[in-house]
Length: 402
Image (cartoon, rainbow, N blue to C red; front, side, top):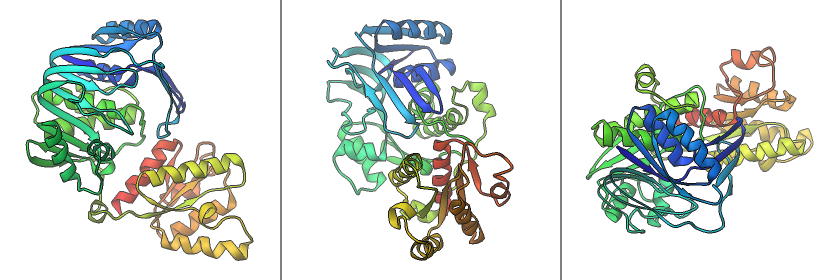
């Protein structure tokens, strides 16, 4: 039996369209059940969410133990990489107490979980102030902590350390046997009682982001707690299963995972050593909608750690004699291009052609243009994406390979 404790929330995303009830714990329970694990889910839920969980538990074959809440929380996204609007109860709820042999614990926004376990996997799930596993009195004889590098720095209150140092210090601070630090296209670092290894991230044709981290935690827990894998092998299996989730926007079964054979992402040595390519952001910026999208792409790429040249931000509007040579010079200086293609703006089409003539990689995001209108871009090996999050990730993967 694997006991999962954490939040179950309403989720709404504008693009791609998504309206469901999952949250970290709800998603992990389904992911584990699909792998044929025996699962018990502990969470807060209002009457409507309790009904959904009861039905899903019966369908997916997991048990639910609900602590009543007057209203369940919710997350609303514009897209899978946007900061969500969070709807949560005003009052914090009484902590859920769990004692079990194998526990997966997620941080929650409406309450807390005090865990006593033989083996525990913990994901703090907080983007500003991750809570220590033991801060609320939780204990585990064998503890694994999973978080990304940014969360690890917040966890310790330090920055500018190597990822190896971060993992070692988190392990010392918590008395954890295992620490897994996720590193985007560079995969994940696994600290296992002083021994450090890395596992790759995997290529997918599409990237559905919401809940992918929950899926990683669930599959790591399955491998480490249920299948008897080493932390390294459990993390690699979790990375593959997460690629399946991102590709298919769904949960993997053991058979599906055996059939799914993604390729590891290619990451250059200089990218691993800290080099970050500069991206030329091509796209029209003549209306509010166009400006919003340019701003969204720029901010997202910067948050991913890349450098960005944006004609709107770095040059601005002006006469051809004032702006064109600056833009062309920037295309020469940048290593790759992200192009917003809807509308087939003449300036953007020219910039794409110029970049391809210089043999620069180009990722083009376009949802509404015909195959005929995209023919030249497709024929010159531009990466064409009709999904915003996928386009961003494909650009990051292209950058990582340079």
